[in-house]
Length: 231
Length: 229
Image 1 (tube, rainbow over the protein chains, first blue to last red):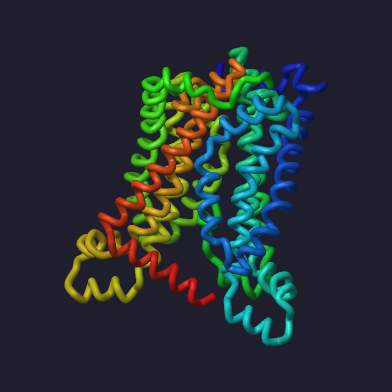
Image 2 (image 1 turned 30 degrees about the vertical axis):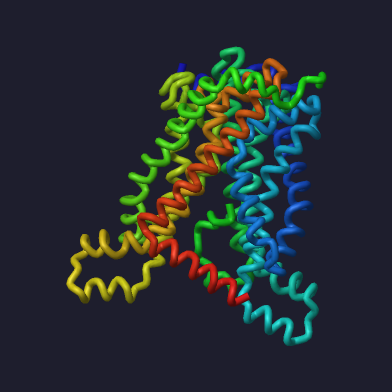
């Protein structure tokens, strides 16, 4: 068996054509979980990050939190959450949100903190209130960093939602985990490839978004390719 | 959930040797790839700095690699490197570490002030000696910052290898889940986080000892940043 055989066996399996185990349905589930987790994480983390970045307070706590979050093993969090609170979509959503939130928090804080202080002073000097400075000056300037953080979070959640299939979540991870359990290699590889496609697709989708989030005049100055520190 | 306690201390007490072995296995699986990546990343980073045109495609490749989900890559590698082998888990981890370390090295080398480089040349340093004695030491704080991120992520990612049968401490999650027994899971999370923390601290200390100027430099930039606020 080679790659093409596996892929065609995966795609041509009648169960993958229609019904609850169909490819379209699984991709939809995966995207729905990802979107839901990102939405909650954004609602929690972005306002907090903006505030921390603007006031400069709690920056140390943010760095510490981001470091800790990076060190926590996803699989452990997911299995523990399910054991403690029975399986439900909400239970699995909590670790996903917990993983996405730190990237967003750090990106929002770093982005706002990175605004040129002179620009900020000038905005205050022209009579804008702090709230106006934050939303009209700092937020637009922070947008590329913030979007880069959102990209990191999206890719993380897509990958982690796959792991969460181990405890019974739907989505593409089902193919990977079920295929491994039943030694059905085409299914496992097919699922894995779909996850890769989804992750790479999300990554590519963000590139133009990040680029066009700044007005043309400001674009030339920003050429750092790697917003890795916002991880 | 029944009235099973979150942690049964008795189980931990009777499995100390087992937990130690898993931790050591985990450390090897997670950290050897970071070392391999470092050995590759420094020359690659140098090449990318010497030939800036190379950097754009290299950065693109590593951005895509970084986006690949761990489980998926492990699975795709199984037919080549085998189920439940260390190699299957270590190859992707090496790639993830490279994706962090190559940009870190390039950023570090690019941040070397031009005046410093020219002074070295003016003092009669040849290109190799300048590289070894001036540029690399000046870039070391960036490389170590990248190493910290790479090592910590690698340690937490390695646990996912348990899904294909080789994940060091990650096995505790599978074991605990299958037996509806939270103790091993809690122990696993704590040990993974502790291993990450110890590695991180070791890297910070190593930087202080081996390159005290870099530690000082970072503090100075932070102070500067604080002052501009």
